[in-house]
Length: 194
Image (tube, rainbow, N blue to C red; front, side):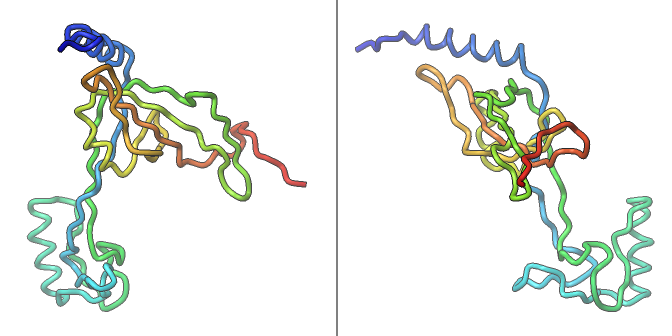
């Protein structure tokens, strides 16, 4: 039994929508979840998920390891002796983060539905919303991302991405909101409480 909309029509619709998105899109940055590696310079406390504040090496061992490390990584410090306290390499976190980002093309719409924003002493009222439309193959990327940079502005996911289209999913719709505060003297409206 044939449906109301033929497969050929669904394919044409899917291709047309993807062509519109491709033609009008611009590049945005999507930050994946960072890779976390335990710090090689200090001990990691699994109970608190932080550094124990104790160095793994003696002064001589740390200097020799750093000399060997600088051969393959010139100008980078990876081993530095400290007595106790905050590790100078991981800053007391107990791990080093490797940030990963991907550039993808998206159709960008700022404030779909004219959402007005107001920054107050109590916080943000109605943060600016951005709607992104892209290929559904990026679904897992957006589900697991830590942040998104759109037009140089950092954004966080508002809700899970949604696949839209006729029949097969033709487009992925992502809603995000800005996380940056207004700049001083930017002309943005601040609500006055008298």
